[in-house]
Length: 223
Image 1 (cartoon, rainbow, N blue to C red):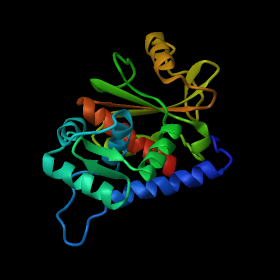
Image 2: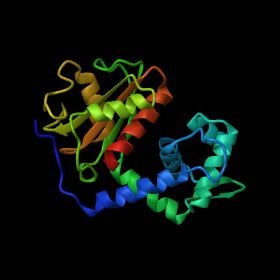
Image 3: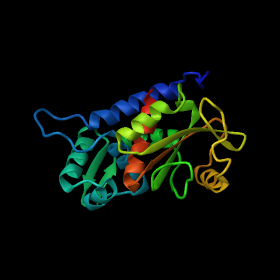
């Protein structure tokens, strides 16, 4: 079986640098306590900071499903890496943070919760679109599934878009032949183009479905 391999370009190399920056944010400092957050939390933080000009601690807690102590540490680490700054109104991105967030928004331009997906196992499903130019090796989806399950997902699908259909990677078989409603919903919300990749993760918890999708997307971009 031949899996899709794309030509390496500077976009991919730049993305690896940006993922390394996210990983630096979750590096423990000296003898500090073990961190209760990870790289997908930081990526979600960056997306949140692009959606809102200023983000309060309470909103961070709500969106990241973390306690105030963990959120304070995230903000501190973002500031130490010159990705964010804090004023009375809340936390906001620095110019460096804006550049990093833009890179990830270019690579992962659309994301959505989806309902009533007939071919996944969990109650909640989350889908992320990845632009093809940022992916050099995709495989058959099994590795992506492993990284989704690592974050609590019960199932994961890795699909590729072609000829107005979502195809299982490797096999190139139509995914939603018996579920046109989900197919049309994904197409409307994600706006995929030819050879773009879609990762769908499933879990019994809505936030777990989202976080596991972010983790899987990061692994795929960094593979």
